[in-house]
Length: 515
Image (cartoon, rainbow, N blue to C red; front, side, top):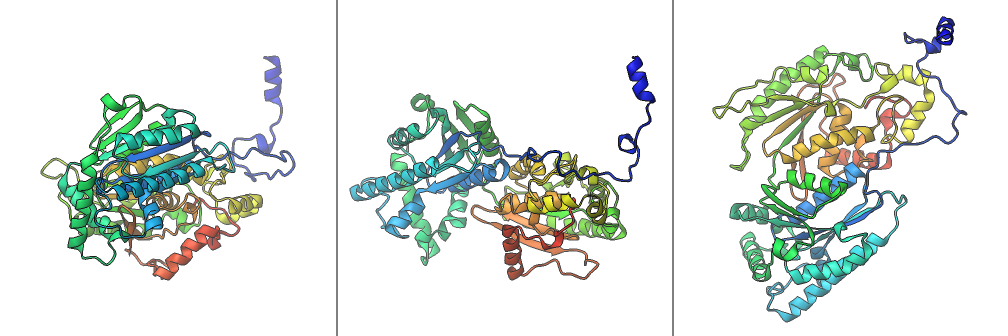
């Protein structure tokens, strides 16, 4: 006690004070020549997994396979690849199969299909055996084919068991759809654009593809507990309305189940918007929790009109969707909440509150830590070395006592899954860094590209995820102060994408920011 009292009586220097400091950041160059560089990489902890798709054509297997691929690449940094038997067939035999090619009674066609399956599986195994630059990453391979018979699935097990740690690392994913309207929609929206039907009349193409489905139905053997009890499998009915699982264990398989529970194939609009320009934005300060500026207030009112005129009164082209059931997501920060305060929350006859606001801390801006509330020039003056570090690795750079983009990606994952699940329109009003992450995920960009996506003020970005694409429209609601048009032409968009891919961010050559 006497020692403690003596220590307390000693004068405290400025660096020990908890009050304001003249310097918040003291550069140190020689105290730790080999620092620990923490990266937010989940990957597979070195394990290798194979997910095998099962099901009739036009059941969303390829859509699900590519969703799984991008989800684990984007949110878990896991090397993931899809091996599609149809693509292998087109490479070996051309794009247009003969009418009876898929008939199980066609001996020659059956032999060719077996050779295609063999080639696809061999390509998968070769890729699975390749080494990563980091052994922690592991690998995930997805075998995308019908695999509708027990004989074929047994053959796959025999081929893949030697290259996997255990049979639990081989998971079958069966997609079943007993809704004729959904199957017809899948055929019209996806299959008619396949290379197999290039140049053919839509009516003939639909008839031919339905005949292909009938051929597969003849020998179709679904996954069943009485026959497949020892296998690991997940069975989905009508896009996740009902799911059955067998022998699913472990962290990554659990993440897979969570993703599949939230997936569906219905196209629906998602609206992304930055908050209105805040007081700190006007003062050129990063982070903080300031309210809106006068320009931000103007945008908030324009946004409310846009919601009323366009989001709530649109034709969604599906009886399964209801524009009046639109949802509103914001962060917990003032500038995000204030941007949405003019939006009406009408109670519908069924009791649904239209645009009922939900606030997510996961949507808060990337935290700038010690630099929160500072201007870029102040940061450059006090911590010039931080500018270089951020420029060299914007994705993984972490603000002192703050966050990195990789940290933000981890927490935004939960919101992304909710957006995957919703079938009605959703408006997300958040911050530059967060909107960049959501946009990059749904547009199929890599996590490395996310920090460089162009998200302008005073604009709404409408995206519509579809099976193989994600449509996009941008609407500028308030003209920016410098008169710059936020609507980019296709050439500018491609240039921006190339800039993101090379990591060349011309706006931030020297000074770090919270975006």
